Image 1 (tube, rainbow, N blue to C red):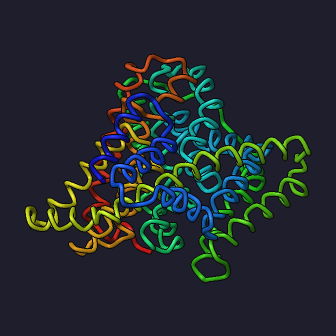
Image 2: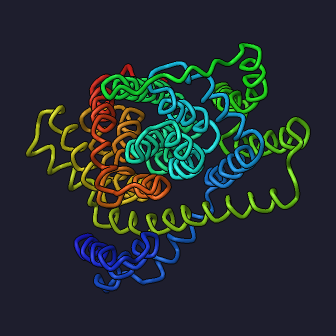
Image 3: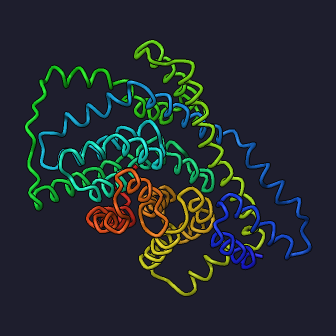
Length: 419
């Protein structure tokens, strides 16, 4: 059944069927091909996946992000990042990186990050004299930092398929996320120095900067409060997500005083639409996962690898190469949901920590978000910058190289994923 399902899925993807529908249909085709399993098993698996209490964390984290970034807070966060970095070579480019770190603690979605930051920062960077393709490449790559800084939607999905604690994954993502940000800031500085981009002396008074930091502090505190709540067992991930929404509402109503009924409805619809897209993929992945389990495909794959590749280093390299290849055409959520059940038994076999594997998957498949031919953040950023896709791709290489160095380090240095 697995081979039939893979063939059906590839055909559906080639004719541009949405991923969620392609997963459900390919699983149904595989069950029909088997002939001995009732087709209703697909509907059952799709339905059962929606009954998971931890999955409620997804819509609530998304709603908290849209509430916090849809008003004055989002503007102040961007202003704080830009004024803090403007004295450095390549400061306008580094603003995108710093903003991605800050926004990552609120939204948890790289695609949302690329859209929100790109629409504001790319036009401003172009007015500062930076070429459109470079601005687009910087935005496309920096957005991936969002999936490493907690709360992270991909980490929640990986927790679903691996059984790893969400709190451990969130904590483990902090150091790689900060290292990626530091690496990208270095790339921005190096590009500015090599191409001779001058520093614009737009000094900001320390008092004004401190005032901006104070106004932005509630949003900066949110990821810290989430980590503390999960680490010390004050609440479950779902309860923390609900509390994040309450926290966002309180800030918008009483601190920033910019929440109108219309904006609340718009944010609610936006979060609901984003959740629907992800949930459809999750439901389809549940049906595909059942077919893989029925055929014992993960166990057979692990056995084949053990019999043919004995060196754990080579196995880790093979896993990374497969993820890089699959991450190019396939989006991050379905890639995690499909590869997780296959790679987890393999990681257990070679003694690779499941949290470390999770960080490898998030970074690796995150790179796929800006890798052609179907790079989601790449297309979004190029469209906002009105830059040719080919020119943007050429500007990706320094950032891509830095991300690959981090991926290699995380793959072979367990200390980088401490939790």
